[in-house]
Image (cartoon, rainbow, N blue to C red; front, side, top):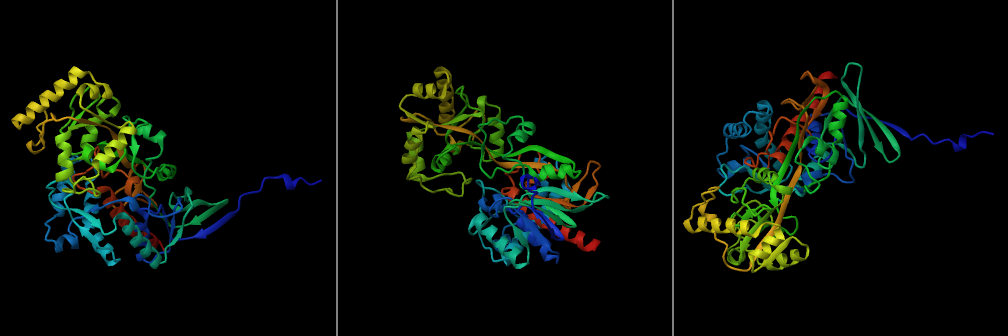
Length: 485
């Protein structure tokens, strides 16, 4: 009797053809649109149900020499921004990559405006930022995604969602020949002459985070999609070298809860202490990656933002000072603050008391040590001179009027940066620094453009690099196809 009925069914196999395949439909939308503009057949593959990725959740991005800046008479020069990046990174990054993406950035704004995207403003991302480079699309990342998606569809890009790529194929000479993907129960073999990796890093892969980022703890809060490092694994399998692993787009201290409460927790006129009751950084610093570095050195990587009733009244009546939150820009009065603070008490993240002794016990700090810190800080405020961290005197307000407030803060990150080694053409490099023919990578999957601390001084660098490296990768991937035809 035949037993074929009991044999496991082989998964269905399909074959597709394209000239360029883009893996990932976040910033990969820009790569797909740019490649299609060059006249090649593009297939865009996304493992999630919808396109957009982290781009859809973004605010604004950095650009230099854009039409918007010219209309607003903002004098932002590529040379100045290039030098700022190289100085900030101590030349630990690839200067040709930095030059390529800065040089492309102004034209990318033109490109997006021609798609119908408009820009609200080029504001200061932080107080008195110069030059103004932070471009905010009208509708933020959602509108940006919508414009790019329409462009892709208009250019004939074929998009398959819920189609994860499993492997990049190469031929006998090591050149890209396609990918293997999956759709439901079917395996799909797709032939292509070039591939662009745009999978967004490994922010959701705890194993890789622990391996490459020594300060990692399970309390580190991710404010973005949990990308698993698919592109990194596939690139290494295809022979790619790595660069920049272990860089996180960190921010902190931050309050993990109400946006209202977080916005006041990061204000410069609060006082920040660790769980020993000691100050550890200039609270008025407006570079979240740098204050996150300071928090990394503290016990359990937690801190507490302290203020009194007088400072709280200032938040309600006068508004905020820092310009780091698109939800609550400077000057917006925090009329609902009391309600949000009371709610977070029940969540165990806020303590309100007329006694510093009670707050010290809640923090877990020695009361005497905490009072020494507060008394010393109040003295600095009385003299308008912070002799410890030299905080701007505008933010020196003493903590004397009860009740007193303590907000528990932690470390957070938007995503990872680094992994696949590339050159300024976004070509993926092998371990001898030669390009792997037909293989390109972009965005947070790649290294060489950020050193150990993310460039908040170039506000919106991550989204800007995704868009501009995507355009560069897509254009070069298409030209590789056309040149080899």
